[in-house]
Image (cartoon, rainbow, N blue to C red; front, side):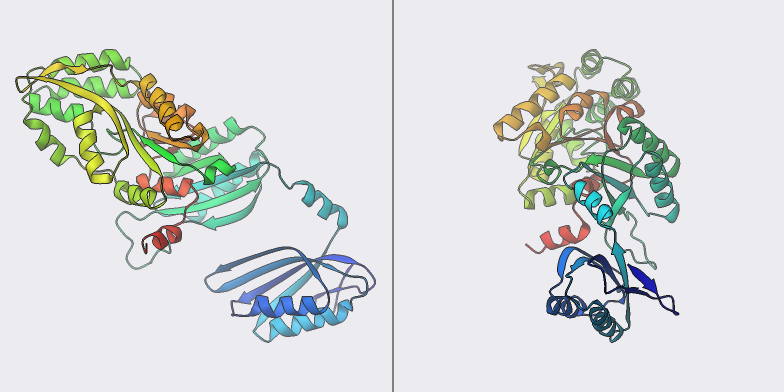
Length: 423
């Protein structure tokens, strides 16, 4: 058992065999872990668990240990205190009840969930709100990690990004209700919150499939072509309704294509040249390529522009609609079947089979209603800067940051990515 002396410090009773939580905290110094474990070795102490965190050079080191019956526990405590005090650190000893330890062991192998917070800059209010909602739904975090890099106070980058990952053992009482509560919180605080089950697949994705228009690029190509054809307002209105799920994609696509009839094919190159990549696209593709991922564009847009992006980003597969052109003019039709939502999902399945991976190892990213079929079957489906219907239907969404925020949902940190840059 633990006794408190006149200074309020805890000590270990020498008469009991104990499981003890040893906590050391103070300024981080090299060699602390080594010196403590050497002392434990001399007393034949066994380590059941160990964890360490350093925040701004402040150390928090914890060890769960078992102390044998024949150990001089008072001497052990004195030696550890002397070692930590010599480097201006403090130590705390807490006896752990055997039934409490058995309960902790029994939780081993239980489901785990990861909650990822994304924002331009994370505040205390963001974390307070997130953890409050989590607690209300029976989720308790046992590990918190900052994924984003250190942020300078004097000169914040224009497109700064912050991410913190929260890890919890167990399953929320009602996962759909938790997702809905997080979505409401995201909307009111201009943040993104993703909830994923922490399975082996989360760390073993192999294929990432992207929509193109308003996902990889900050435009709808068909709208850009319509501007060149002088029918921009008409086509844009149809596009907006289709992406919001208000119109059937095939019907809306036919209507928009008909309005492009007679467009000179020479404008395709100039439109491709002015298309702007979405924030974070280049960094994302560079990282995915370093890690050996396969990438694909599955688009209801046009093959000509998909191939242009393929050359810029190194995309492995491109599937999109092929414009029908006769005598140098757009005919208002496409060659072959239209790449609609169902076709995107089918292509995603085919690519997974081709790459010999499961659907759980696929990430799908899109913004429109026609992306929902592929988002729903992928192991990680992400609605990116999406319409309200799509955000409400997809399990995960990113609205505040760029495409490279997907890397945070994959569990990668800025430090990981900086290391990749050295290779």
